[in-house]
Length: 386
Image (cartoon, rainbow, N blue to C red; front, side, top):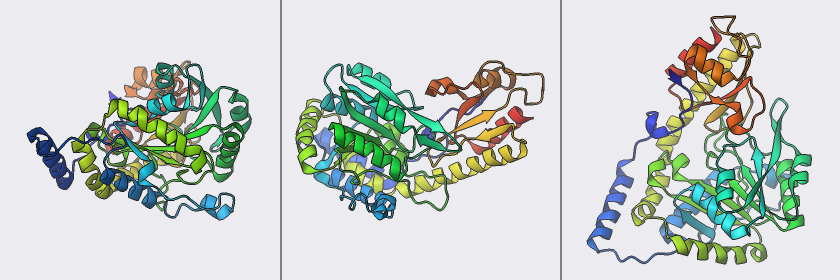
């Protein structure tokens, strides 16, 4: 079987812990175990680690000027270490923010399609996840009518995932402005998951758009070393808050109180974070090369297929949506009357994620990982297309 679903960089030959951060981890852990370093936790995380995140965010948004140049936003707010909070993961960050923003029975708006993680986290927090629609017309775009229809009197946040998983799409400036207008009119917050923001598909792009510091609504931007550095096993992520002082400051007090209940970030990982972020370039270069090669293989296969095979357009990330017409492959009689992923597995021993996993209501679509070994992907395309 050829598996096209794995997105774990530590199993794809792409992640290795650099020597210097490893030394930071070792020294911090040894000091803690020996009792040399006093345990003096800050609910937000150590200052040095938060300063490193602020520097990373400043570097990532540098040159992202689409909204600033439009004249609508009035400039971008600088990242502030005092508004950064460390967590063990982005999943934990979602949970903390839902606790902060919602009472039981309140609602958050989430994109559809999307990775099936946010809804169960919301459910655990007794919060209802209400979908808004992304529509595909030669590219993924926000269905504004769906967004506005989904917002109700108990809506407390709009979740953005950009680039989205699995669509790979980002919101454009006009779409962000519509979301911002909705949030300002209703007094609700933006939760922006930007974990894949360093991985554009366009080779000339340095990074993808960010809403951090660029909206007038209370905004919480999520990131972490799982994707940024390819180190999911270190379990350290962040929430970066931005927006007007009068809207954000009361929320920061509540978020710090929630984080103080858990203190889930370990000192060794926090101590290593500045070096990890400094040395992220090696992993990111390797991952971008992998994404570029695999996207080229998919597009070449689409060009050769005579319209039978299509790669949906997107901006970045680690997954891609593909469409395959029924009855293709070596055995032209092998028509998948049901689900593409089931057909690919049964007829060709190729494992894709089924479209319904992401609430995509089309049987001829599947989702595959761009982290896949390129040789495996090319073999799988050969099997599927014949």
